[in-house]
Structure formats: C-alpha cells, structure tokens
Image (cartoon, rainbow, N blue to C red; front, side, top):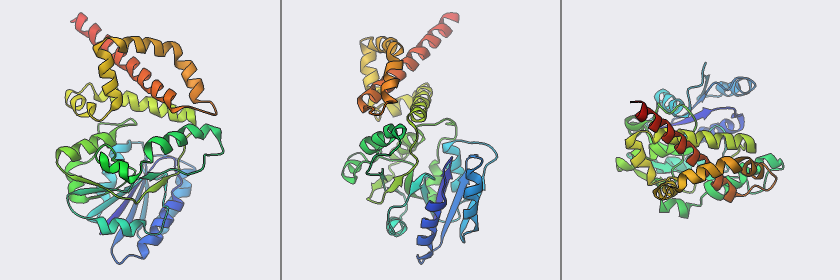
Length: 311
C-alpha cells in the first residue's frame, strides 16, 4: 500500500530507516522503503548502504548529483505501491505512531503534510544556532498556523500523496540548484484543486548546518528564485506566495530597490558578521535576504538593458 521514499544527501539515515522499518513490520499492509543517495560519497555511502540488508528496504547511490527535484521524481518512479510518503534523509521520527497515522489518512487526490519539528534545546555548537533559530521560529509551524495557508505551508520533507496524482504533476526537473521546488509543486497542487491536508504528524529536522553553509544555501535559493522569475508564468505564480517578492515589488515602484541593492553591497560584510556571531538575529537575516535579492534583480536588470541596447 505504501512506498516510503527517502532522498539522501550528506545524511546518516540508519536511525531513520531503522525506526521506519520497525513500524512497517507492525502494519498489516505492504510497505516498502526506497532510499536513493544523490551522490554524497563516503563516508555516507559506506554507512547508509547497510540499510539495504533490511527486509523491504532498498538502497542506491547515484553516480552523479541530479538535484532535489529529479531525485524525488526518480524515487517515485521506483515505487510499486499506490501511496508515496516522502521523508528527507536528515529527519528523525519522534513517535511510534508515525506510519499508522499516515496510513489512516491515505486517500486519492489529496496531499497530507505532517509538519516539522526542531529540537527544543539550542545546539551546543554556536555555529548551528542560526539554522536552529530560524527553523524553530519560521519552519516549525504549529498545525493551527499551517491550516490557515495550506499550500504556502507545504514542505517536501514530510508528505504523503497518492502515486497517480504525483505522476501527473512531479517536481520540475529543470530546477537543478537548491531552492523552491516545494513552492512550485504546491502551486501545481493549488492550480489543479488538489487538497492539501495538514495534520499533526511531524518529523524532527536533525540536519542542522553551520551558519556559513546555511547562508550559502540561502543565497543559492535566492539565486534560484531570481532565475525562475525570468519565466513570465513563474513570476506571476510565485509573487503571491513570497512576502520578499511583494516587498521588492513595492520598493521597485519608488525606485528604492536599486538604492537598497547599493546599500547591501556596502553593509553585506557587517550583516554577515552579525549572522555568523553567537547571537544571530532573524531581523538581520531578513535584511540579508532582501538586500541580496535586490542586488540580484538589479544585476539582472543591467544585463537586460545591456542586451536591449546592443540590439
């Protein structure tokens, strides 16, 4: 009945798969667990390959990195069961009712999202604090908040969908870099009037990253967003769901986006130092995101003007 699909990148999945495997054995239905590593290499391959010896569990490492969208599409193509449960490899299962809860909610033409938790205590390593702080404040939304905006609250790290519906939509394989594949998938769900049901069945996000790495991934996600906005159909679809885009649009009306881009270049190093400190503030992270995005869009505008002038 259920295919549990685990995309892996630089994560030790042994504890996650073991917990899922134990729950799967206790269910009176067919459950397979498919794990595909997006070319993490060693030591992760050596560690994770051991899960393939468990009954009903398969493990594969790809010879090259194909990205977050394509690996999820690949996992779905390997699934033999009518329902798909996607769980990121850097997750932990908080209780023994995780799979039974999802099985009880399985149904056609809908998506079920369980949510995300972050550890309640801050990490001992101060370099992990920024990621933890942001996750606790902005990503670990309680069910009551997720219900208010079900499509915007959709995340790819923990959701159930029937295979027939997924095969009609899939993830946009053209997105090879990090960021926003979940947003576009949620847009497709909304446009096709597919229900997104949120429930209280979270996974714990265990893969905290150092602040420097986290900022680099934030920049990459903003670069991905900027590239997506070059496509007119994506620009109109994405603007309603991104407060950052709405703020940028308002700034653009008064020509303030270029001014902010210039100011960001002057103060970028200072803001980064604050975010890499022992007490990073989310206000400064918001400023960093907006400034970085304004700089990207200003650069895109310069390129477009130069191209037009050349012609």
